[in-house]
Image 1 (cartoon, rainbow, N blue to C red):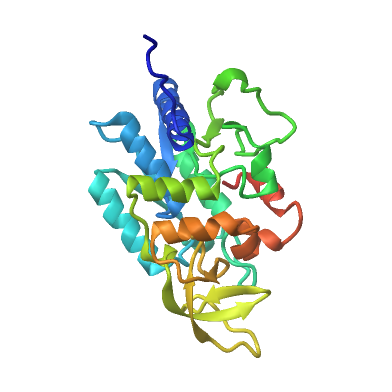
Image 2 (image 1 turned 180 degrees about the vertical axis):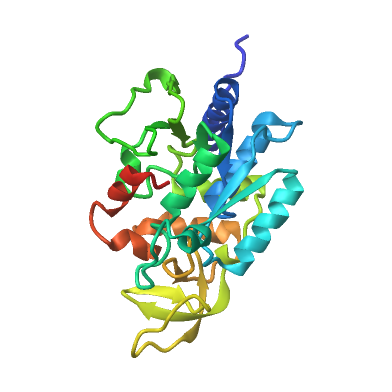
Length: 302
């Protein structure tokens, strides 16, 4: 009598890969940290990390790079989540860099690019040697080029032409003092995988990921939330619409989409038929040029 075959579903396989990556980092690095904005990818990443080290809490803090232009619902969710998991939260502020004159704000460009200085400063100050990020290869061209273990030099820079092979899921985290590794446990996931996992695992998210009524402004083919951080241009008139957010970031450049999807299952059905990535459809800061994201990553961006 033959034994029944043991097979993983595609979500179980993705989760197992991410669990392996978390444990590999915990075993080989001294001071890892997990980037946590309260968004769906960082929430899935935290959920997997909690499973990887259960019954103990994840053996590293979480860090939010705060632009100061946040959705209130997301910050409230971030703080509740950190308390619920019993984590230490590190917040590094873009506003601190602006006040100290380390960066100069361009009101027309938003603050996303300024996050790089705040991130690299926090990595130096806390001597973090591994930084978990929720980036996925399906999001954007530059992110599709990146390895799971992404080496960064002493300036936090990424060289897309000088990456380490990762054959058979063997990861090379060697680095000298002052250098660090960006680690992406969700690299091989897609937006649809993320939402299917959220539905299957009952992962909680900020309310703005689901359909709600909100004042919006149409700009450059996108719907931007009308918040206190958004300066209206001439001729722009806010109006109310039924929307949800596919991704969460700086409120001045993160767009929403018209949607009636009010549950994870309804979002899964919606994402399954879309032909635009979430960043391509809803992130104004990614539209600066074809190589915009790659240029920012070379400077040390997420």
